[in-house]
Amino acid sequence: MSAAAMDYEQAGELKIGQVGIANLRIRSLDVARLVDEMRQRVQRAPRLFARAAVVIDFGGLSQLPDAATARALIDGLVEAGVLPVALAYGTTETERLSEALGLPLLAKFRAQYERADGATAAAEPAPTAAAPAAAVPAATTAPGGGQPGKIQSAPVRSGQQVYADNRDLTVLSPVGAGAEVIADGSVHIYGPLRGRALAGAQGNEQARIFCREFHAELVAIAGHYRVLEDIPSDLRGKAVQVWLEDQQLKIAALD
Image 1 (tube, rainbow, N blue to C red):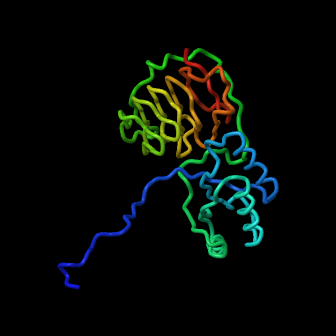
Image 2: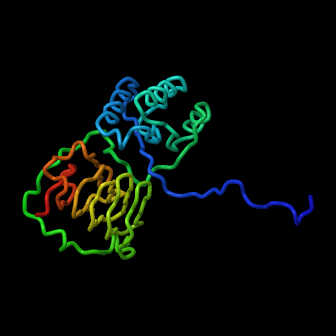
Image 3: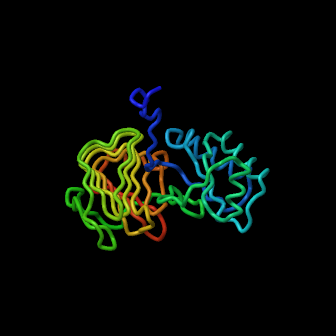
């Protein structure tokens, strides 16, 4: 075949981007308990967790499990309804374990959906009245004085993710079910929130989430999260703010 006749078009185009993958940090190597906890998560919030991609992080253990125990955990998590796709990068021993399991290694995640101790916090009303949603600044600088806030004017549709790196994120339109908005600072949403909103993604516990119409699948601040099934029904559809106080995630109406 002549060079002129050769087809140089790629059969598959590879792009590296952000994906929403949950990080399961193992605090206690009790396979049965871990599997049962995951099964309960899937049962409580199937739209969020069923067949969700999960990275297993053994960094919380003093000693890595052997390959047989790790395989039993992976098989149990699959049976519980999620899909383990990788191990979180750790030591050279973690790398060898990943090879034995046939799984890739991924670096530590920007955002965790759960507190490191595995606990969840109860939603509580604010002790004082908050300002109306309209009074929230549309774009502010992120903690640390970095870039000005990012503004998203187009709707965020199912499967899409918008991330504001080292700054606040302001969304002027709806966030659909299955969509995700993430900011290292605070998140301001001036339309309905039906997907997921994560603020303080790099661990900033002062970040907040403000929303005009609250139907969120999940909200999280600095890794502390709540799913829709755990949120009081009287807050659904309301203008709310979400913040951390004494290591507990709190949600309260703005009006």
